[in-house]
Every structure is written in C-alpha cells, then in structure tokens.
Image (cartoon, rainbow, N blue to C red):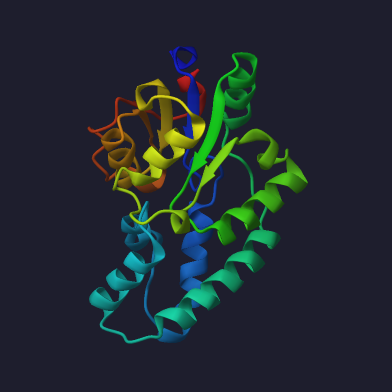
Amino acid sequence: MINNFKAIIFDMDGVFIDTETLVFDIFRHVFEPFNIDLSNEYQYKFIGKPFSSNLIDIHSDFGIEFDDAALRDKFDDVYEEMLTASPLSVQAGVKDIIKNAQQNDQKLALCTTSTRHHVNAVFTKVREKFFDPDQIFGVVTTGDMVRHRKPHPEPYLKTVDKLGVAPKDCLVLEDSITGIQSAKAAGCFCVGLRQPYNQHINFDAADIIVSHLDQVL
C-alpha cells in the first residue's frame, strides 16, 4: 500500500519520535509550584493540541492564574534539559519506512504542531543517536510557520505544496485527532497510529488504523 504514494509525511511527537510521555513529565515539572495533579491520564487530552490550548485547559480545570509567556519560556528550558537527559528514540518502524521510501524515490516530510525551536532540539538529539533528519526530510512544517494549526488543513496543505505533489498522493502518519482531521481536510490519505495514551480518541476519520508503524509496510 505505502508504495502507491509519492510522499510520506510524519507527525513528530508520538509518531516520528517517542516523546509524549516525556512531554507529560515536562508539564508536571513546570507546574509543580502550583501543586496540581497533572497525571498522564489528565494530559491525554493535550495530544495534538498547541501549548497555548493546553494552558487554557489547565487554567479552566484547576482555576489557577499564571503568566503564559513566563511558562512558555520555562517549558522551553525544561524541554531542552529533559530532552538532552532522556534516552530519546525514534519510534519502532520509522527507520524501515524511511528506508523503503528512499528505495522507492518517495519524498519525506515532517509536519508538526511543535515549534521550530522544539524541532531543532529533537533533531539535534536524533542526529547524535540515529541519523541526520535534515538529510531525510525535504520539507519540515512547524506550528509557528502557519497561521492556523491542526486541525485546520493549512499545515498539511503547506507541506504538500512545498513537496510539489498532490494531497491525494501523500500518506500521512498521525497519532492525534487534530492531526488526522488536518490531514484529511487537506485531502491526504491518513494512517492513525494507536498508542496507550490515545486509546480514548475516536480515530474513525483515519483511512486506516495501525498499532505499530511496521504495519504500514
């Protein structure tokens, strides 16, 4: 199936790399002074949403006041610290999909809600342990490069346009409902990746659902 497409587009967190549980720990660290319980189960609803939306949820659910800009700066600092210290790994199956795409002259791209700052931090870590993402992905679209983030189609439309292919010729790998909605609204074929943290999410909008990326091959 995968070889019928001209391009493969990865989401980053939870699809290209295994960072979702790391991000949960970062949120807990950042909000530790507020003495609130940000359990993994609570943070499941953060999946696929921008940081600003996560802050709105926390403010509404816990009734606490904070400086958004200051928390963003602290989150970025802690993100880099914990990312550097963590045994970050690319998701199982990623390297096989990349190898298969290269053998079949398929284009590769990354489309994420994360900022370029976070992407750079992740790429540095991946470059040290695995391969150079800048040599793999011909196009990288980040959340601060678009006016409307996922679930709006703009992120994937922008990515597809830069790849120079039609949306219908792109296979997207996503793990969030916002990402799936964005990809489908852009006209792409979308694979929903089931993970322990997204079992509660309705993936009916995805074209197919897998529990492991190797199943895509």
